[in-house]
Length: 243
Ligand SMILES: [Fe+2]
Ligand SMILES: [Fe+2]
Image 1 (cartoon, protein in one colour):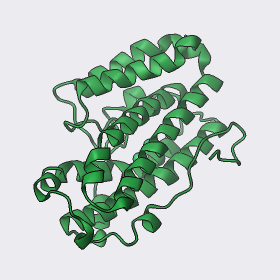
Image 2 (image 1 turned 90 degrees about the vertical axis):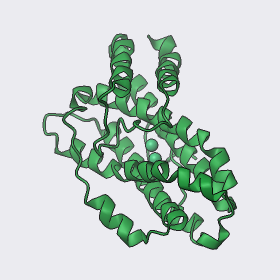
Image 3 (image 1 turned 60 degrees about the vertical axis):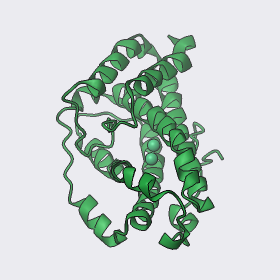
């Protein structure tokens, strides 16, 4: 579905995690307990990252040195609605899988403080911010796709639908970022290969750590070096004809 209010055809899908997962409960989970326990850290990590879209949005809005276009602001608003919907979905999933009340999760998640110091080097202007988002979103799309068999193994069909909806949203975010890059930042495309190299090097460095910033959260073994390298290639392939 196209988001019809957008003058540049930004893509957005209308669905609700809370509605989709309303009937999800512990008894309905039939998946392997060992596998579920082994994935505890990953589910928790993904949920926190989705919530952190709020940190990233507030960070952008507080950066008085940035000039952000109207198209970018519309993109960011749509994106944020989706990411918070993903957070609410993963909050329910973590609660059901690991027996933690959703109110406790909210409390914990909101108590974390973001630190953008190490990544503001990638967030110089609208162009570099969009490229960083594109890299993050294409990686998220692939990471959720990797999780399809896991979600399918848990039992309830709503979880299979949820992870596919989330992957579809992440792909739309990626597509929307690419659309804005093509529309307004084509003249800077000669900078793409070097900037993407810097991002991949940053995320694969030994001392790389995630600080609740939403962006650059690829610090678990879900995000292999090959996956990050393939995200870089995907962006360059998509924009190759414009390079
Ligand atoms: Fe998301
Ligand atoms: Fe996303």
